[in-house]
Amino acid sequence: MAEAKVKLERDDTPMTDVDDWTLVDVPAVDPATTKLQMDHIKTERESLKQVLIKSKQTKGFPNPTQEQLGLLKRLDDFLVWLELKLHMTPEVERETKVGSFVNQVYNPMLCLPQAYAAKVEALHKTWLASNWGEVKKEVKRESDSDSAVEGSESPPKRARASAPGYTTSHLPPPQDPLWGLNGIMHGIAIRTGADGRRSNFTDPRYKREKREAKVFGHNGLENGAWYPFRLNAIFHGAHGASQAGISGDLQTGAYSIVVSNLYHEFDEDLGNTIVYCGAGGNDNIDPNRAAKSTGTEALRASRQNGQSVRVLRTASGRSAWAPRAGLRYDGLYRVVSVNNTQRNRLGGMVETFKLVRLDNQQPIDLSRPTAQEVRDLERVPSTTIGASWTSKRE
Image (tube, rainbow, N blue to C red; front, side, top):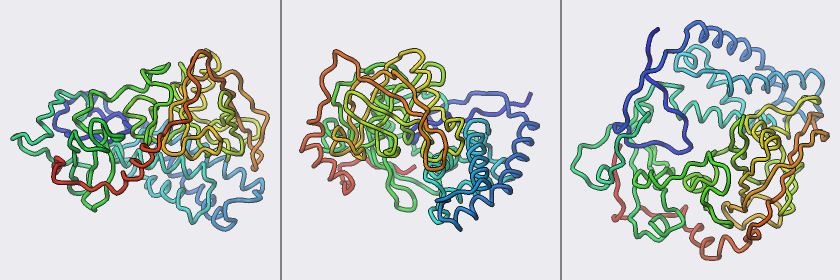
């Protein structure tokens, strides 16, 4: 069988210094399977154009007909297939233009229900981040030497093939009050793209400090631990997903959940007890089946095996227990029951999970974030990259 270089497994943080990674061979994708997948995409893409047209005409299906409900169900099934079954490659994108289709789905002008737009946007970003499944050299890190990023004499790294032009990584000095060793942004650095846009990524000097989030229990976290952004929570191993509210495994259960306001119609936060809506509950159209989601499946597994789940609350939450800013770790909970008797505005089944906080833990720490942490967070977006920062063009 032909061989192809392995694709990078998706991580929640951008990767740097790609020349430090080695190559691994894996079997190439079966061409026959790829052809069948491309044919399926083309068929569904043409059929589902009517969903986009009708959504724009009706401004989001406020009173959907049976025909429109059928179209939405078909769209939902197609998106689940794209997420779980499709093996994306540059050839698939080139031949099917599926990227153009999903890009339309989360166009605000089309007024599609928010759950569809959010799911498709995350999917599209995943494809873009992997350059449509293009084969990469990034599998096993050989060195984490600080000298490679702090003014060494080694030649500069070349840019990733998928990057549009050059990017510049800015590594903060250890004494920086916000981004340094004792700052709220420790472990995170800033990258400036060729277009001038800035984004945060894991500081390569502290890769070894980055904690694995695929762990049950407290994972070394203290009750009340506070994080400015999702990326900080990921760095410290509190949560394992950059966008999804549920991080877990289909078989062993959910490692963590994030309580926000996305499903405020069905969520209920009473502090020690939480009713948490499964993913896609707002816009499911099937009255007999809950929306398909890997996160929801993980919560079902947690209900079956009794494994504890880390709970983080965000400032977007509407309850009295939500932090004033950022995200806060509030300890371990257990899924004690599942309810699927509720229906959403489209008549679709809504699946909710009741979680109860475990005993023998410190009370939820409402003092976090502190006033100083909030002031520091307010300064982060306006951070100036000074002369003391180590910058490197990639």
